[in-house]
Length: 491
Image 1 (cartoon, rainbow, N blue to C red):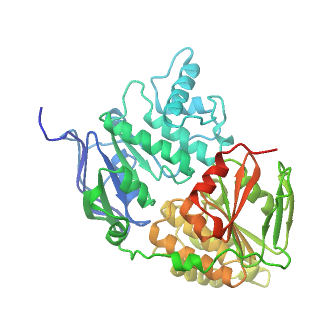
Image 2 (image 1 turned 180 degrees about the vertical axis):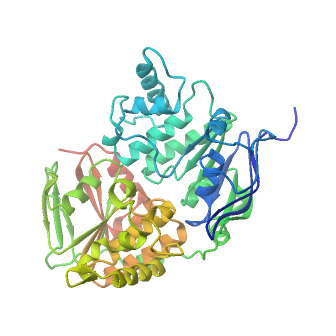
Image 3 (image 1 turned 90 degrees about the horizontal axis):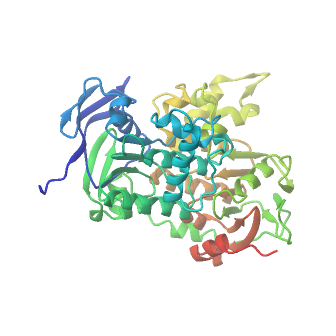
């Protein structure tokens, strides 16, 4: 048996230009059987474009694509990739929201046909969900549009790994854990290691550098459409990986410590009691506070944010709000962006009153606002008049953050807002949040990233729609959050 691993796919000198933008500038990439390749880089570095080429959804402008040593560049398509066992879980989910879980499984697996296909499709997808995410709580007949973004992500992942007529040889996971809590993310990454150990291959794209270093056998770093570093995963540390991406790693402990737990004695800006709450615990947020919402995904955190945004109109409990609000949506495709609008209009929509001249919107003011925040938050675009969909997923999220921070909102609600955002931008945004809080702005922040809770003054842990713990910054530990998340809520 040869000691040289088999090439599943190889890209040589791949280029892709979108007008003057060089999304890919001569990229070489090889993935072997039985390995997990980590792919990292800032938003706009070219990662998603490269995966679109590999999955057949985007044709390269130049370069060679080889599958198991055979040049397939001419006529390479989604069908070619699918036949070769290449599956892709995109950052922007591709499920049909009006169909059930079983029906969505059938779309990818055409072999599920004939009498009883719906039953067989349901059994296939639920069996795979059981393998990857034990205790997932998803039924084959569930309508996808009714699922949380985390559960939609789980269905899409399970669908990609499912086997019918063609086994999965290479599964591309583009930010697969971005909407998953720590427990579910750990289940997925453990499954990925088992899949690779059995001879499968994965490309793992993530801005969570710890999970890349822990999971990937080999790590490739992209910057400005090029591969700038490549070596074994064990050859990187978090700091060296950040440096290769073109950022400066910095210990933010001092900044976080400046926001040691504080409770104001004045009137709160937000007071909310979850509908299921039976004890005296309320969510309370004062001016200048950063309040975190934690716990396993789907246990009432997002419902609480929506209740606050609608001042109780969603029926989620008693809510009192003082002052204007803004929301940074985590599910940007459904709840955040206006896909037919420009970047400038998406940024300015929350600030219409300030952008008016008379009864009309002043386009010069709108453009100035968008340009200011493009610079401040680092939105990678040559022109703010471009359509919002011209941006990468992470840059779309930056635009939503710019929309909220540019507004007159006294309280900013954040629904896992850093999903798919690179580490350099995260550091900058964390700094902005602290500065805005110093100026008196209030933040209520639901996050699935444990590290982000360190930036909060105090954290409410949710379970089964209830607040089960209120941890001040001085008492906040990962163990306490996990213990509160999993212990049975006491009546």
